[in-house]
Length: 123
Image (cartoon, rainbow, N blue to C red):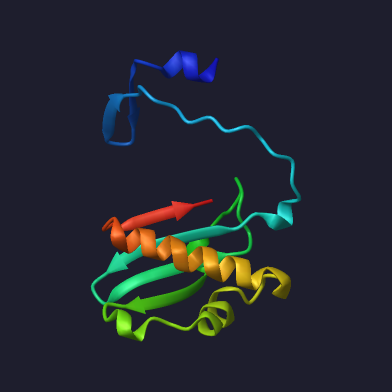
């Protein structure tokens, strides 16, 4: 019903208006709340900030206030080690998932750079 009410019709979000033609709808997979994470990568003059919090989901709240932050400098020769990524961003995440999350963050950042994104957010 929600999609049918909006498909093919002009919608406005704040100051932007446009017609919605495509919707991505994914099935809900039951899971514990403490397995949801949030990540944001955004570009600034000095490099790219990665913000990560162990509290994802619909009620993520004030990310700037609670996220761990890591600045990736413009000079990628100074890209942080896996250990530095884990120590900086994953302080509140169980040690058992650090390797998987560091791999995910590293690969996500590579896509971010390769596609010349300036902002990316996954909740």
